[in-house]
Length: 176
Image 1 (cartoon, rainbow, N blue to C red):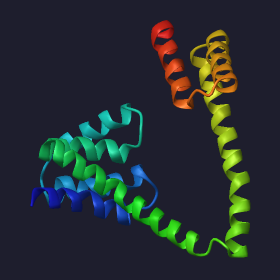
Image 2 (image 1 turned 90 degrees about the horizontal axis):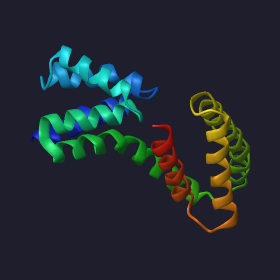
Image 3 (image 1 turned 180 degrees about the horizontal axis):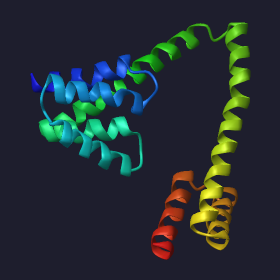
Image 4 (image 1 turned 120 degrees about the vertical axis):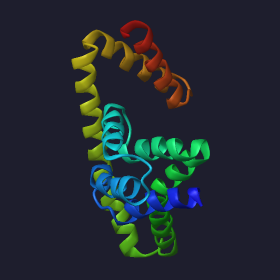
């Protein structure tokens, strides 16, 4: 019964909450503090503060921590699944619909409009990463990491994740 309650406590806010993690935090607090009493308002606020200090989406961090606190590792897994399940279900539904109408002119033209938008978003993300790298590590280290990554990806058939790991290792050893 506890795992079902954990599932409901995180599934419902993620289904009805619109606007991402910050928008659903009050809904999760209502479930966790008000409805089930698993935490006090003060403990929830401290958990939220800790979650905001760490990287990654806030909703999944909160779900993992609260789920673990309430039900151990199985509780964390249930709460995490309940957090991502609404998006997963919606994506599967959208994918099924797009696949069913994949030969439609409207779907093909929609796909052609999405590509440039994704390209602009990726360019913006790249610019922001470069700007943060220059501000944090400096020009020399950013150039070394970028140059080595470009050589690895261009000259070899190395997987991009390996190049990222090399960059992380460089940063941890020489910049940390």
